[in-house]
Image (cartoon, rainbow, N blue to C red):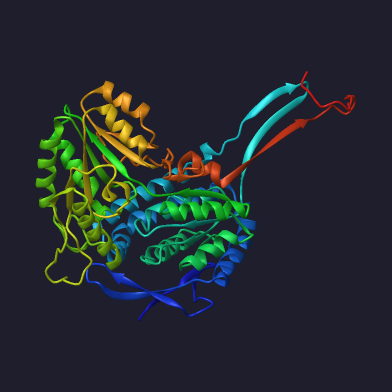
Length: 498
């Protein structure tokens, strides 16, 4: 059986050891390939290659770097379908959904193509007599990314284009559940003209992660995953003296007011809850029904949940594919049973779904829970599956209070026809990304992505202007050019402007 190898210094590389782990096709439940489990030695080999490449890549012109990004962006366009099918085969999401994540990742490449404007420094003339000040930003060195299974193309694309375009080199540790997209992207970079060693991939699990966090020659680490692991990455990496971006979990609420178009809201909440089988950090997992909107909203959500077409991701017409692993399937279906035992009403029960011809696949159907309270596990836990919980409240203020009391603060949405309610909502919720009549408010690439509270450990969001700041550090230069015959007095007092 084929083994997916690392990608180091411009080509596939066998690991220092022969340990591997299986990669499954979630639609069939069968092992389809294996992936190498990287060791500290593999991480070190990638970092050595990246460090050597940094010496020349960091000195390359901004024009050269953006030319590579333009070529890379075009290759992503040309190979969107192929990459989408690779993602679908290992993750389970539909091919169209996979193509959507490629597009959203490509937007960051497009942002990186325009870094000439973002990287412009500032200049202050004559701050003191004959003295000027200017500043500019320089790359850090080797930057690493540790990314999750749910977006094997998009999340890494939110990291490495900005890092590379600003002059850094990069080591990616993707999820071992769906590793092939990382190697495919590495091949596109090579075709785009990126020098060997600038982009490297080391596959594996915790051993590889710990080697990255402890490596003395890695300057910064970007991470996206669960909150407990984000806290571990942030603490371990910062203790080792690194910059760390650590994005954690989520419990995203969609609030529906009585004045909202309920059919519109139900359509978009259904797509936001069950798209990609709920395996998104921006998935809608809680619908907050306000006042008299509740009964009609639940009825519409039930109807639409039952209409979702579940099947293999590569079959045309499929709207929701399987979960990524059998363990994920069991966890999600157990959560529905726990919710019922704790008093929730199971309006739609997706458990036990079998897809013809794919009986061993990791399929479950959409589940809809009503009368969920903040004390129930279905509300408190990040289920990361196609389960939508409905919480009923009396007023918008109660909805805001509910959201603010939740430990997560990643994304939220409000469905309403009232500008006043929308303005009050967006100013008062303690959440980093907000949608008004938009269920999945992922910002464009020229803004930054990141939540509040337990959804972002530390203070550094990802991509956009914050990504540029994370991947570079500033220098400020104070300059005097005295005339040859000019005498400039030197003083022992602290210098001041005059």
